[in-house]
Image 1: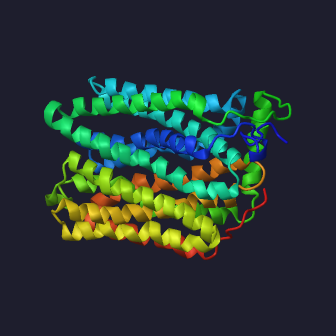
Image 2: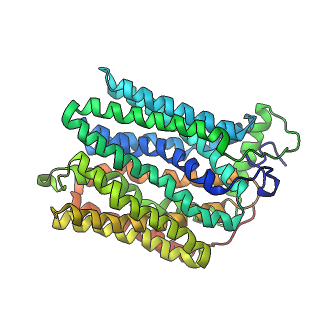
Image 3: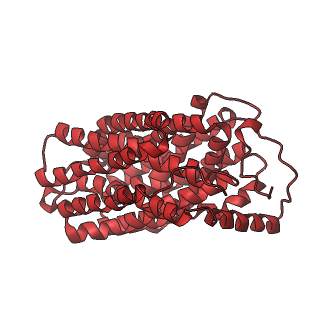
Length: 432
């Protein structure tokens, strides 16, 4: 066995059992908060500060590259004496950095400082994710992984709705009373404080048992050799290039919708948007959107555990992408009733939550199976994030070129290739 030892031991080797519901929800909430702070909350802040859709998509998309390439430094995390404390440390770093964003918004060079701090948040968060996913894989068997994938996905993405729900409502209220910079200073201060609280909670809540691995050579040469072996064995898996293409394309529609959808809701009706206020967008995502997504995520996890990944996959892909048609409907009909808008987005969010389970379990159980399970999972999720980033970076320019209505038709078309490709995918675990 090489130096990395998959970052975490097999589930059977873990010594201290904690019920998954004591740590899975909070672990993935802490994983999602900094991700969505960079990917979505930053975009809403920049929108309030007058930055264009194209610039927002490019900057927030580029910051997402930290999650795409995180596997390249994953073996070096073997140097951490405790995986649990490594998770806690990165959560605390992320919380402190988000707090500094709040201060940076009060300075003349706020844009450059915020981008630098968001880059630090992205690096800390993406590195945290490697160890957190390794703890998840090590402490749950395959059936538990499927059953709790709904909780995992629900609370990872619940961070999105906490941010675009409660905090966005607060930002909208404060914008009317103290202005945009003061409002978003408060929001990022609260985000930072929440991350710090979660980090302190996880000091005791995360599973404490770690196997005593065989002696390893903790030197850079051995780690570099391990990294090369991890990469070589990953690309030696049967059908890996088809699997990578499948992973990248899986989020083609989502990457564009999740970037442009909230901006569409806020843009003026004169340019094709719905003209909602910051607070109204928060209410839509924080009520119906939150409930629909959480229900969809948990239903998708249990549905896949019951039916099996191979039989469930076409349903998951359709569920994730077909509801995107509601954005085309909203851009075409431009309804004014907030209840109609919320109901439409509820349908889209239920489908998104239900289908997102598919790509997570495909990477976890098919691509990452075998030796170096956690490291290969990090590589797989890196390609998943790369696909998300690539489509997000171009989404702003495509939307500005096509307008909102035709852009949402393009998003629907962009989801078709992965549905076709799924018919040719091997959905059984591979050797490594």
